Image (cartoon, rainbow, N blue to C red; front, side, top):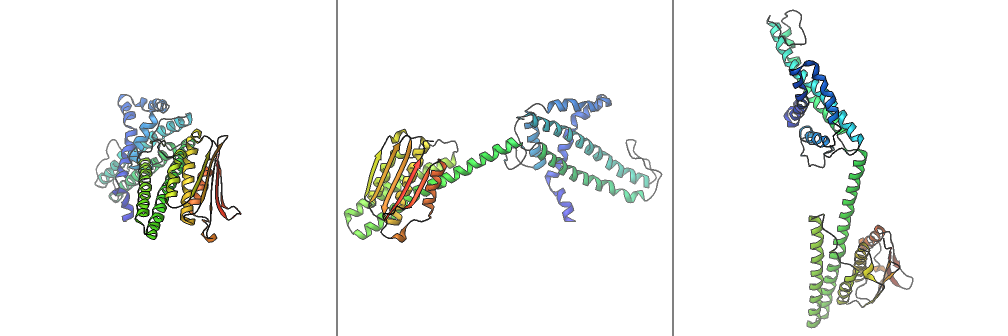
Length: 388
């Protein structure tokens, strides 16, 4: 019993009923002028469906009254946008005519069913039917009174059933077209790619800073030298400030999706990475050839992050070891090569998140990444990024 009454405790049941009544308000006005003109409203309604902006009006009404959601709620599969194609206009015309037909039937039943219930009671008491009744009752029988609740129950079924019907029609006829679904899917994909990029940004930046800080702190404790401790604290402070700047920038991207990416570090800022690694005790031998400043923005920004992750892996897995870094730009192709000895072969990075991030960054730009032993006892990270 509670399940049968549940729809009548929901506000959307009555807003759907109102939505159907609204469809027949202005056609009903023609009846007061001339009953023969009542069906003439079908033609202007079809013409209105060809107006692109009419889809916005119907979409807003459908979202508010049929689903109970706000017009700006993206989770509802009812479009609030002008018709972009003739197929959209055709579906809107069908929607307007279907809403008119269903609304007219519901309006008639909403009036006639309560009237029929009253007529049944009057007939059982020996009275007369109302003059506007469409269903005529034969004679006056006492058992008519037992049937009087039936029309009211039918009215309740009509209210709930017609609401479900018009909502399904709205999702079908006012829902997104195939082109709009594809566009929404592409937008969703772009959002996921952006979130993955931000996750990689945080991993590379914060992971590098924490690795440098841990190594510096451990080295300062082992050295037991005031001078070395001062240098270590300075390096930790500088690396921490850089990480905070990166964190603030990434959070800014999350807060403001339209923010440009021009503030992200590029390979022109690679000296900061090299100095941070040297401050951690690693002997970094760097060589830069070619015009790094001529690289496209995406290439030089991703190249910076790849170099940062490669140096972080050196410090994390190999410690303070001699590291050779080569950055080369030839014919627009960026080549990054980082090599370092492995004191303990068991300390190889293997399949960590850092190496996976390097490969993902290279693949997104159509490049190649090679990681692993080079056969001479060194660990290598070699990445080639095309100009785009």
